[in-house]
Figure 1 (cartoon, helix red, strand yellow):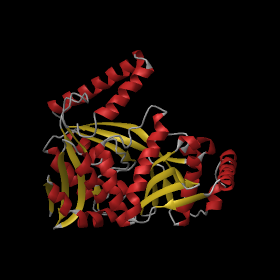
Figure 2 (cartoon, one colour):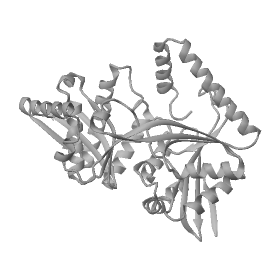
Figure 3 (cartoon, helix red, strand yellow):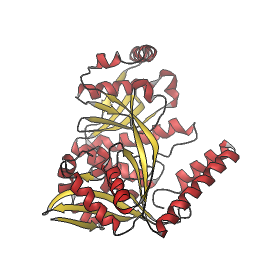
Figure 4 (spheres, one colour):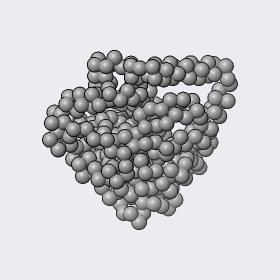
Length: 387
């Protein structure tokens, strides 16, 4: 017999860890951003005023699904006059591939049980960073089919990635465009000839904190010249990454690399190896060395390291920055699902969201681009995760 439980407290979330790990390993949704470590740490540091809404589905006591959700109250600052439910991990922290977690072979039972639960509560859901074929999309389809809920789906991001299956470094290098391949090899030769160059991974806790702070510093030095970055911009994000990187190192997932030239750290990459995938999360470099292309050289060295340790994929995660396509040829789409219940509240919420978006489109047409950029930066740096 299926049973759904609602967990809304920190201690209940913490107690789920052993079962969470086992369930995620047995799920098609399995990815780094759905690990207990990522989502629990997000909840501790970045949840703000949200309320925990962890739904668990059990079959005769055995955990078969988790819907990792949080309720967000209305906020006129965010132009959101209605509350909603969203995934844990949502926001500027940069989670990708968020989803419901269900045991293989039990997906239909899980989404039917969750659909029945949600149908009786008429909750608006706004679910972002979903990949194609997600369990959440199947849950939305069940709500639409069985309860006449309204679904708005939109493509929001792409994730470039490199399929490394069967590749050595040499065979992968041969797949790159000739101009980029030759440029990379020339830049690498110049660095090895002109400097005492070395690549160092972080392997012990004593090194982790200092190198992570160097990532923050170099990232901001790179982006300050371009108007700033929303990564690592708040105390909550910094504390999140400090704890998360410690947990990831203990689990063997952390991949934190520093490129040194003449004993000076000039570039860093912050990523994770989970299962067979290397997740490229963030990077930074010293702008004083931009002419030497230290960021590009480090990327190549880290891709090579990923191949040599047996990774089958190098995921550059969301964002269509041109440099990513120098290294990758394939992409995945990420979508947002807005799921509105068939009642007055749902209709009002849906129409309000449509109105806010139309106002934003109009403002983009009439306001100077520089003003729009300033408003976007102010919201990214000032509103924060907790509103």
